[in-house]
Image (cartoon, rainbow, N blue to C red):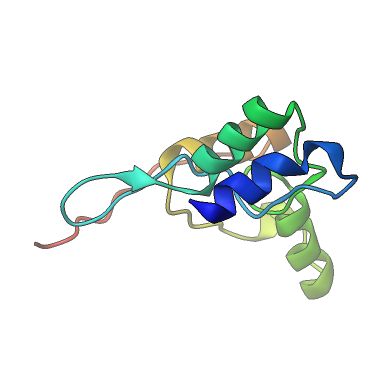
Length: 107
């Protein structure tokens, strides 16, 4: 809780807000739990500040940095995701072709 209080008190400080990814929930064996996107929303509402930078999906910079390093284009690779809603947002936001496949987890 101290970390949340510290983060939300930063509205008067000119500190950049960096978001690693936008996932709102993280699935667990028992139930979903809040993920970093939920906490970022809390900070946004409390401080009226939006993240200066988002590195993960659906931001295309993370994909482009890999494509640039490997010297390939997006139509020469397959991106495998882990969260359907951010995977779809990544594809739509960046005009990538998108196909859905599912892998069943045994419990």
